[in-house]
Length: 111
Length: 115
Image 1 (cartoon, rainbow over the protein chains, first blue to last red):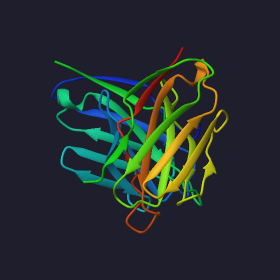
Image 2 (cartoon, chains in turn red, orange):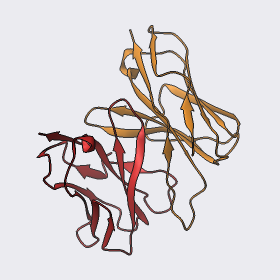
Image 3 (cartoon, helix red, strand yellow):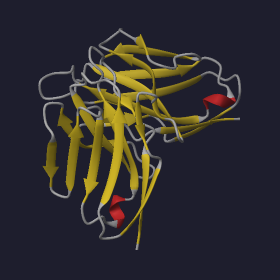
Image 4 (cartoon, rainbow over the protein chains, first blue to last red):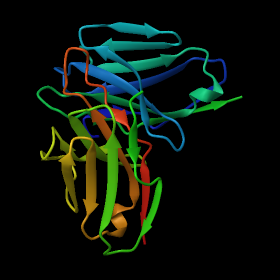
């Protein structure tokens, strides 16, 4: 989507940390999301952050939100081969029913 | 577990054919969505529905129509399929947005090829 931007590809070595970055445009978005799509499957919600938070941690996942710069990141610690997937950043613009998605970042984990 | 199912995983149709893609959810969700997914473009919203018999155009509705006669079922219709409608089609559903967020649950997708 044109309102949410993310890089298209990331290659990371197994055991290293992955960081996926996203920028969005609607500063009044209430929630920001990270979805994961494994090969041949639909999207699955990985985590989300409420707009009044700066950080959210969930096991190996850390989400950082910089509202001033409209920047969202997802860090995956100790990246595993099962983390190979496409990761989508998404926002819910204010007064809108729909999600705006980024183009997706394809993460490839190499041994 | 929330389940969103789509009638076909793979579909091959010819130019000019009328194509029906069906989506069914079992969690009594009010809202349902149809997206298409293309490499480098992410997900783009075609149509969505707030509730039964209601529909709203998304970002790219041209060449598509939808039907929501029952709450659990949302159909996407390609009136006259064209090659530029070759894509992955994803259906999603959710409850009305509320204080606990507005997570959308996705089906597995239908990969449509129009020859």
